[in-house]
Amino acid sequence: MATLGELERAVMEQLWAANSALSVREVHQALGSERELAYTTVMTVLDRLAKKDVVSRERVGRAWMYRPTSTREAMVAEVMHSALGEQEVDRSAALMAFVDRVSPDEMALLREALGQVEERHSPRRD
Image (cartoon, rainbow, N blue to C red):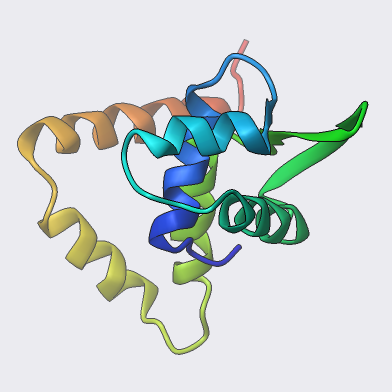
């Protein structure tokens, strides 16, 4: 999954914040308070996100309704995993550079997450 552009991220933020699928008009109105955008621009962005499988869409009457195909957190994890999977990347060096930049609170979260993953993947001894 490729990273998203600024406008794509803004559209996704609206979709993630919603409790249900949104129409182009609803996304356009929500973004209107932040920036001047043509309705057709929002429609094009949502169409491109659907083609990238970042959103799903369903026809309801005459309108398309859009919803994210994954959570924000799952998408971030996929982008990170994809970046680490590139052949030219030294995974160890990239992970070290990432960990070197995290705050103490984020480090504690990483330790907790690693512990949970290790617990799930370790053989059970009964």
